[in-house]
Length: 292
Image (cartoon, rainbow, N blue to C red):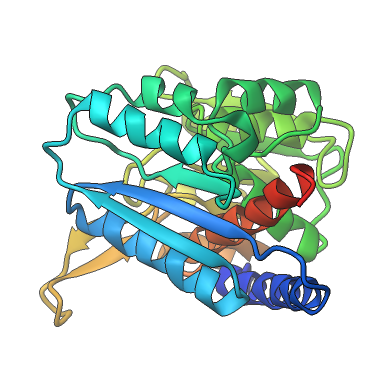
């Protein structure tokens, strides 16, 4: 068993991006600028946005964090999104999800300019991804693809089972892995809450990707020997043995599953850092696509 070290791989990507930014600065070119909107005080969202800001600082990007109380109206938030669309100094921006229940997340996502949608959530970017046209790939699926690529994991002809059909992870990842590319050329089964005989399907998987949002859902009896396991889940569970009173676990029961695998991502330190690295790559791409 070998761990797919997303933390280490993401660090290599940040180092590569830092070198590119340094070259741009030497030429007197524009520095990439990423903005993030955070609504409310959710601990997980705040930690995630903070990690993005820190990544920008390390690479040499400019960054702007815009915070609102969770009482902000939908109209006011949409006006801020429109303002950022028009701000030429900002190359890309994100609105951190989830949003309060009184705000329509789809409406917010649709309002973001596709040219600045570095999270890759806008319908135009999702459509371009489907047709394999230029655009921004969703950060988490793109990060998983990059991780598979950098570890030289063979995907061609393999059976990949993805548990979870969200528009953010499962569905776009199923398309990316099935297309004629490397990594890619998989036979993909996209499973979900209504899938029958899920255990039997998972046992057929050469590559099993868990993105269902249920802590430690995948157990050893669902995994065949030698499988590659990608764990997208991140859930806080109570743990009185920890000083902070909780720990992070994934959708895979790591301790019992890992010995059966050829490769497996840990939680934390697996997919999460790669998501942020992909976001940084998209930000640089956004600036370049806009001719800056």
